[in-house]
Image (cartoon, rainbow over all chains, first blue to last red; front, side):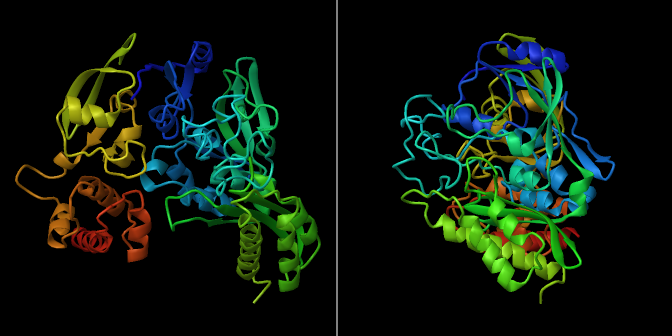
Length: 330
Length: 160
């Protein structure tokens, strides 16, 4: 391991002050950061351990939930209220990483994990995310795993968090402790598109620390599920995934959030699918038609065009399974 | 923990014994176990958290020690393959691996066994499919998976 200093912040003020040190990075579970150090992608001079100052509690928030940023993936996935109110989130977590990593990785760190793009993690190649201005090797390279939504010639790296995709479907907010005070950002607006500055991945400002994730009670009025398609049965990132959160009224779709993972430079709302489902019954014909709209606006590259029909199929399957589970389709 | 530039003093409880170490902040738990404490049963495979050969228990929960800083384990309990059973005896999971020939080269085996011990404690040995899913963080390049599943199933039954 390359050398760096380790310090433990005593409280959030100390963490903010320490974060101004040149080359300093926060560390929580460390499961992504230490891989990046090993691969020479990240070169911190100092890591600031924040795990002992952040809450790991999962609390009832008037029918919603507040998740402390230091909660481990396993603690969240096994939490009865999370499983009951937001099953898509629990399913996304159980389908993430390995049992060992789920014991280590935290809620906050999961949202900040870096892309699995081959070129980002290979320091021998150009990458605008790693070396701003050096170019994008994936645009005309081995781009099988790259994004079909939200990218451009500067970057087509997928944001790989399953958790984030499910949280967007559940209207979650990120609570940030900034040096200037606390603020909240909707998770749908948390990750930035890699258009002007691919190296800046979120709306967080220097020193900002994620302290909690809040899921509102209104989202618990909808039923949710998460479907993940991957290259092997377990311990693998999504090739495509689909989180859906739907409320039916008298057999018709009263409200729907359909969000795709593995395909976007950030969690990708499929608004065409949502529009096609609005006020409709979940019949086979409606589902088939709506799922087709998952392809709206897709911009595949040479090696990832297969993701377009795969995503359509995943959305169709998720909707069918949802309809069956809700007893509105045989 | 005292902090003085790069050198840190930490204290861990490893296999029931208190161990004090002065380490670099960037030292992983894996390197500290192997190179400083000479507990070489814990193996270094990928060093990237992807193979599971370095699995140990931290406060009773399985983690990959290659992605754990020893500073993060300060004040906590670490169990390695050496600490599973008293000297000269085998833990039921170790005995089941021998009985079922659940390895070829043996390099991934300590990590497989630590993971299996945790899996059984977590209550995830309910079916072969569940065992496979919850052993997915441990790779075996020899492909001894069939016998590993049999060993875990058998050990879980004997420990019930």
